[in-house]
Amino acid sequence: MVTLVNSTDVPQLIPQFQQWVADQWGNVQTPAVSPGESDFPTPIFALENDKLLGGLAFTRHIKPDDDSVGVWINALYVSPDHRKRGIAACLIQMAEVEAVKFGIDELYVYTDVPIIYQKQGWEICKTVDDHTVLRRALAG
Image 1: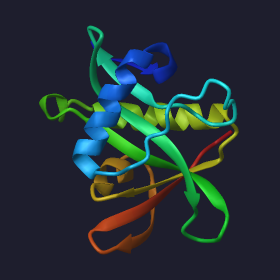
Image 2 (image 1 turned 180 degrees about the horizontal axis):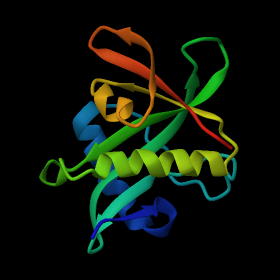
Image 3 (image 1 turned 180 degrees about the vertical axis):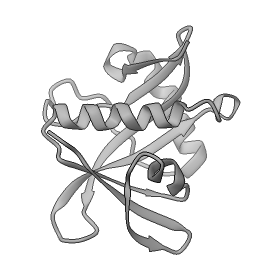
Image 4 (image 1 turned 45 degrees about the vertical axis):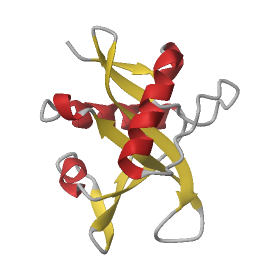
């Protein structure tokens, strides 16, 4: 059974997730867990029998429609052995719930796999080459 947890509950798994992200995308910032940063969600992990299956991390970045800073999903990764099980969708749903807890009213993502987000009601903002920027308005 897959369990979703906050990375603060399993800090020993953070380096593994960061390595997966680095291996997949190179130099992508995956925020370390900052217990003192109470206004921003920490990464979320999917576990099965205490084994890391995947994770999702957030970042702050300029919104696509104005010059203000918004909250983005900057890394969503599921181990290849565990894909096609709905884990990514569960991580995205948990990200939305966590964002609302922090008073965040919208999330953004820049991805080459927009269908994962579109199936959950995310709206396309724009397409850049082979990537798509999507937005999700969140009910608070």
